[in-house]
Length: 110
Image 1 (cartoon, rainbow, N blue to C red):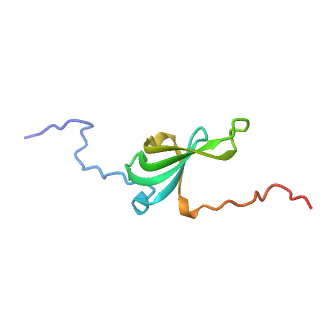
Image 2 (image 1 turned 90 degrees about the horizontal axis):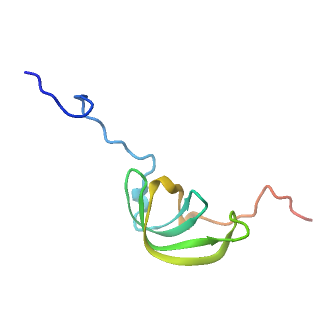
Image 3 (image 1 turned 45 degrees about the horizontal axis):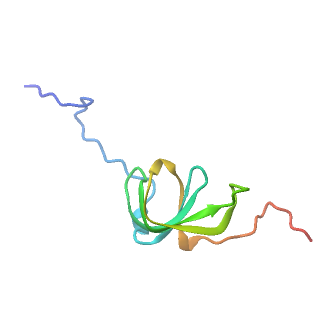
């Protein structure tokens, strides 16, 4: 007796797709997130899913220079609890692993 199943008709169990990133090690730790369009935020990672949607708490947005959108200023604004859509996320990094360095491609005056 044949049984029918919905969907694609594929009888095999599909494996759950695993994310390329293991963000579980950053849960409840500060991270910095860059978004398409140039915005940057930092906060405490509270949750995530396989689509890279993120939940950040105590979030701070790092504001850009109005004259040069590619340059960040020292100005920030507090956002609180934020849900970041995964399709807009470009980069995720631990906040404690970041350090500003001089641009190696700019010729130093001397």
